[in-house]
Image (cartoon, rainbow, N blue to C red; front, side, top):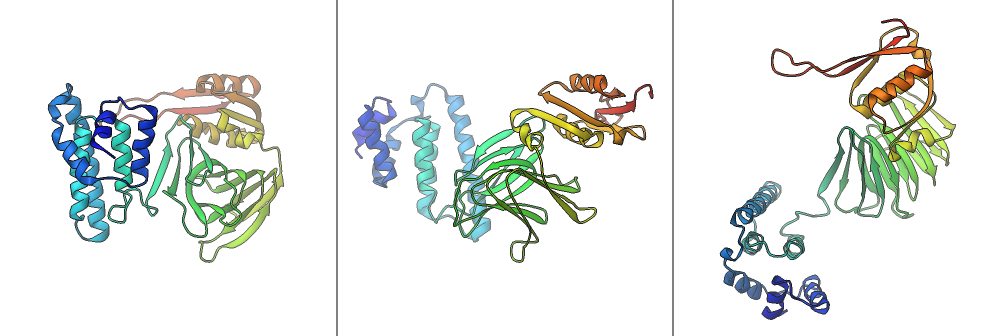
Length: 354
């Protein structure tokens, strides 16, 4: 790589062939550190007309570098090698002058994936959280697609290594597992786990729920109980089956069902097919992040058949009121004396009961 090519890239004047040449040099490790250093030293920060933005971005880079340096010191008990620190300074300046973001990010990642700096090491673990009123879709390193329902969290490694592809779930998620017969995909949640190879399935396991559920659309999965060192097989599932474990009774059921109602949340749908009102209320509470409770005895025996597609909560309640002998009261949030707010509640009554 030449200084001429660096200058053209910085000025965004490269031809398509020169861009390919530039990235090929980086990806193949053909980097002359002295060339990079001398080039950065010649570029004055005053070249950038937006000094405030430049300083802001530089601060963010420094913050990230400091966090990662602290992480390395804690994990290995010593300071970063001098070469790594020099590279940090070098690319901090590149960010400060707002050089092309692709260049800064690409080179930064290439240099700091080494043994001296495992910012993106295989051992690094990440978590994705789907906040209330949102659903998240993303892809894991092995090509597995994940849909994460609101209020749920998935913890996973930067890259799968070893004999399994293991993730930890809190909440609800749908998985389309990339096929790999040699390395099974395992979803752990509490004391139970789902083991698959190339499969599409849904797992629901919230910490405040006594039930663990798995709905299998395609492929095969094995339900495991216990930690990974001595896990025992509970059962094997076939497509179209739904597994439900009840923690309160330490028992499970495995039945052939229409799974549409259990996987349709990916498309923003809530589908109920003769579901008990207690189950409907539980799902609506999580879906709308609001506390809904049954106020009168006997309501738990009512069943609901309905489909809701991203309707507002009030509209859903009105639809339920029209098809079942119920009424409801919404208690809005109010400010308390300590400055905090009460939570919003929905109280379900027998029709004419409030």
